[in-house]
Length: 432
Image (cartoon, one colour):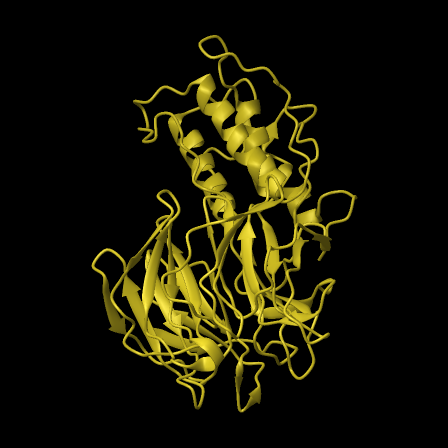
């Protein structure tokens, strides 16, 4: 559902009632529920189509915006096109084009920059970085092994380029190379056990998973996991459906394999849980396709473009699970009566960090990172930090920040009140 300019939903409105008893007005400003992309669990819905139909594109998410990069168009050419999708408004916008026209490229995001790696049937080593803040591209150190149809994943600020193929599909690689954006250098890592192209890659809890793809003749069910800490690979439970040129996304620690081609263009969606090393089948994607881009924003997986014969502009959104809103200690808070405690701040931090993770925002660095109930004194600084951390979520979602009763907070002078905490709770729940 796309957010309207109207009032908060009845669920959020009823939740706000009782947050503070005895308050005449609870100022939460524009804290409307951000329900863009939200739907019932295990369901698909259709979104605004991408302006430029294409397949073999790359996709990456920066600050709650999905970027569709490069690809092969309906005109039969590789494109330099970059288009950005904002789930909060269900709209697309055109961004600065790449310097070269790649398809079959890999994409990864590190520290707010989107990296486009390799690609094109001639297999090139080019690496370019896009900065959404300035809408500009810059050239980076070339990948040692030129290739296309590779997989890319990011672990702890390092980008890993996995598998792929040389010019016109020969050879097919098991090569793994790591790029460090800080030093702008590449290094070679332990090879993937199974050489393949057209694979999907996802990262869960610091482990990179290489899923499916093709060995050159048919689709694979192969799943292999790479641990950068030990530079080793292990084999995992195979994917039930063999497929090539699939999309992969990670939602709440579960890896989703979407579409691809095997026995035709598949609609199949299968979910892998690393905790149990098991697969399960999920609701099928409405439009069967392969060579699509996948990105996850706010816990919703977006399947973008691809092909089932022609180049597609189709965008479909998958809601994997419903995330329960947080519960709070001392609820409702009593204005003038409830004393603000460390636990109140700690609970809000946990809830806000969950929201920041959904929007691909980094963890906020708080003062007094470990709050101890009954020991840590609640400070004005704790309040201002929480507001800043939550404001970034609203910005990422394309919404105006909440407004507060006590706008000015002076450290060492201001005492945090029940009203301050209640307003933050309301603003957090409104975007949940």
